[in-house]
Every structure is written in C-alpha cells, then in structure tokens.
Image (cartoon, rainbow, N blue to C red; front, side, top):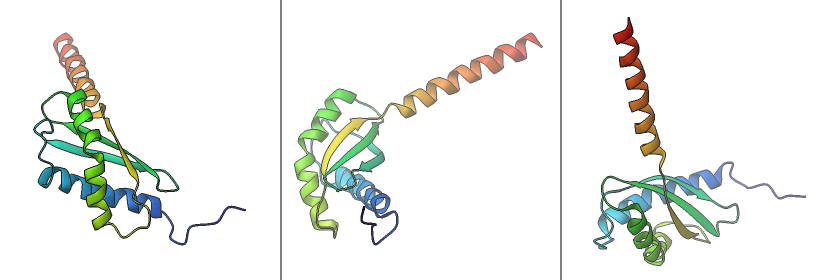
Length: 122
C-alpha cells in the first residue's frame, strides 16, 4: 500500500519555494554573463524530490546558450538551495527553455490580425 504524505500538496509547496528561491538566486548570485533577465515560469518536482525540471523564459538573448549556462550552474544553485530549504533531499536541477510566452504572443498577434481584417470587412 502506498504511504500517504503527512502534508497534502507538499510537492507543490516545495516546487513553489524552489521557484521563488531560484528566481532570487539567479538574479543576485549568478554572475554568468550568458544569463540575462531570466524568469522562472514553473518547477516540476518528482515525488521522491530527486529531480526538478525548471522551466524558464528570457527577455533577450539566446535560449540555447542560456539553457547551457543554467545547466552548468545547476550544482552551484542546488548548493545554495540546500542552505535555504529545510528538506532532506534537494533535487537535481534540470533547466528547460519554456516557449509558452512566445506562443502566446504569436497567438495574440494572429487574433489581432483576424479582428482587424474582420472590422475592415464590415
């Protein structure tokens, strides 16, 4: 039988705390010039807290270069997270570029174009 967690939604709470702490650490502690303005969009933590997928977006810069830089700095960031979080296992971080904001902007542009073409027809 599967053991139930003592705190409901603990995984979501841990992921949320990791997201907040990583945002602050990347902005203040990370000195890599390849990492510019990074926004942490979401964090998904495995049930055993061994791994965490960190989805991010950037304002300017190359997504591949930023992904590489963040994955190289993952150990440094994990070490700082270990000092901040009060959990037994701090997950290994895996950074992935999130294209959701780009797709949303593209969809908004398409909708605006459709609306403007419809208003011209009327």
